Each structure stands twice: as structure tokens, then as C-alpha cells.
Image (tube, rainbow, N blue to C red; front, top):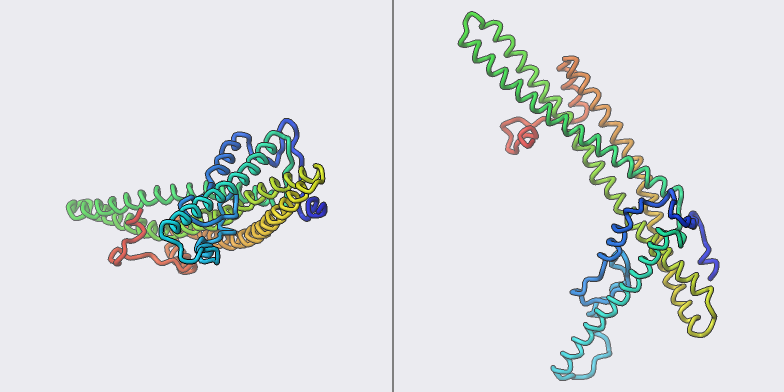
Length: 344
């Protein structure tokens, strides 16, 4: 039993200093949010099923009531009144059991969370993994900034293209109504129309860049961070039941305590397995995310550079070639669906 408790495979338990200043912990003002997360994960009492899960609200250990109602515990040919009372009593017992298990688990996790924050407990830390998680969060914040700036660039440049289009139309109209300046208005109109065409081509490239970054940040990275959140919840549960087992192990060894100790050991092992599984899942997702990020950003940064360079160099042929290289197709105004310019 002691080997199961003190196992520190790729992790270690670090004590929290008495003043609560641990560099690996979040800011203290996040305590209220963490406590709210513990409390809002309560059971759904509208579902008549026995749940053996706990903090975090997973679907593990759900026993449908149909399996209970179909068991051999029913009395033969019960009267409708008696049968109805038994069903109501059974549902009440199920809901009471759900609330009891959730309450015990929430109490243990809340106690563990508070003890960590106030320097009275220890937490299990995988230094390498948590460094990668913090790096991912920082990377996501920076990529969100790039995404915001790229969207602002798209909106501003779209306004510029629309202005150039209107200016070109105005020059063309004046060239027809001003014979003495027809040539001057004419070539200015052609210049604005050419700039407008190249601007629309550049907008197609920038819009593709924005769409790809948005997918990377708000779907791929967000999916990995959801798994990270589940891992952090499992870590808290694991430490809560580990602490509970350690406290029981240091107590007296009578018959009642031994029974509770066996139950605590079983619960601890269950949460340890869940924690280690999620830790492995997070490590795999972080690895795949890094590989995917490098692949996506290599392509998108090359596209962005080539398109911007070709546009401001006035190289229309190179600009169009860049879009063909990355398989970007601009929709015509007469298409069934509105063009991406019209959707801005």
C-alpha cells in the first residue's frame, strides 16, 4: 500500500510554502474561480441514474436505473399502489446517493485546493509537462494578438480597396464629361482599377491567412487546452484522495479503520489511474499540436510574405502566382454564394 501512495513516476509532490508564494501556482485571485468550478459541477438530479463519478462531472460509473428495475429484487405481482411507492422510493434513494457521493468528492477537492493555496498541503507536479502547458497558454495569447491584428489589417485594407474602386469610377465618369482632361482622368481611372484588382487579390491571400490562424488558435489549441483542464481536475482529485489515504494510514489500526483504509486505497487507485491516463493524453496532444503548428505556420507565413511583397512591388503576375501556389480561389461576384468580400 505504501508503494502505491509514494509512487512518483514522472511526477513529484512539492510542499507549498507557508506564505503561499509558489512559482508554479496560479495567482491567488483565481481561488474564487477554482472554488466555483468545484461547486458548479454538481449532479443532475433530473436523471434517475446512479453516478459513481465525482468532481468534474464525468459520465464514468453511471448505472442506468433500467438495470435495477429489471433485476430480480421485484416482488411477484405487486399491487399498483405498492409498486408506485417502491419506484418513488427507489428514485429518491438514487438521487440521495448521487448527492452524497458528489458532496463527499467536492468536499475533499475543496479541502485540497484550499490547503494548497494557503501552504498547508502538497500538490503533485510534473515539471516538464506543466512547463509545456504554460508555454502553450502563452503561445495562444500571442497568436490571438496576431489574429486580432491580421483581422484589423483585413478590415482596413478592404476599406482602401472599396475607396479605390469608387475613386476609379469617379475618374472614369469625369473623363467622359471633361474632354480637355479626358486623357488624364482616363489613365488615373485605369490605375485605380488596377490597384483595386490587385488589392482584391491580396485580400484573398490575407483572408486565407486569417482563417487558418483562427482555426489553429480557436479550434486546435482550444481542444488541447480542454484536455489540459480535465487533466488539472484529475490532478486535484488525485491529490485529494492521496492526502485522505495518507491521513488514514497514520491513524490507529482497528477493524473499522482497516475497512475505511481499504476503501480509501481503492478510491485512490481509481483516481491515480485516471490522472495518469489524462497526463499521457495531454503529453501526446501537446506533441501533435507543436508539429501541426509548425507545419501550418510555415505555410501561412510564406503565403503572407509572398503576397504582401508582390502587392507592394506592383508585381501583379507574382501576386496571382502566389494564390495559385497555395490553391486560393477568389469567388466571382456572380457566384451563387456571396464572395468573402461581401461577407465582411
